[in-house]
Length: 266
Image (cartoon, rainbow, N blue to C red):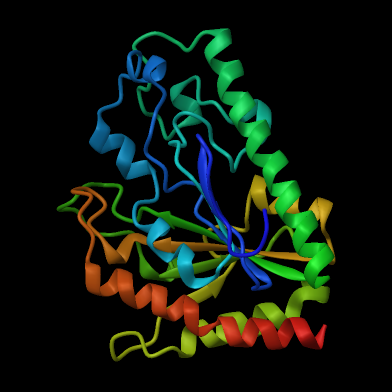
């Protein structure tokens, strides 16, 4: 897709531009195929709780993005292909997912969506490599920290940073200066008169998307798996705080100049 073009695909939205940064929020989608809706036992509120609401509000910090629209309960793009369709409670936080299990044909259709997404990622990343040499991916996620209930104490802040930067799948020695600059810029941002708690590899280190990227583009692509604690919303009601959501977008945008400088230094 040429610079400045926006494309509507049945499974995702996509836009290409001039920045050496690609943004995606692969768990922000909520849509389900009709055949899966018919056999889904999980209520919509519980499904939304395990998705990443509002992460799609932050993709416009770069002019390159790809935004999947389907729920992780249809296909989880951040798991290995043979684990990308949840078939049991053990696959999905102990939740009772299905009235009747998905058929082999349903699973195959979901895996075909998985294959289509990674094929498109390869197209995008090959173009980015050809254009920029090296580039960065913001892999935006969110995580729950009040799993015991809406009126129960949250999980300890010491083990649950507001922003966790997962770097466990990359060559940290090679990408280290860029990672350090990104974390410092994000922490230094004036976030509503305070500074965000930003730490590395405390809660998550990155999963399939990150692993695939660094396996295929080890010194061309630096994927930052950025996990936001859901402090910006009520994870039980699904309601977001628009002021904090906007401030997070501004915080991410504040890191772009430093990333471009770090890429130029490499």
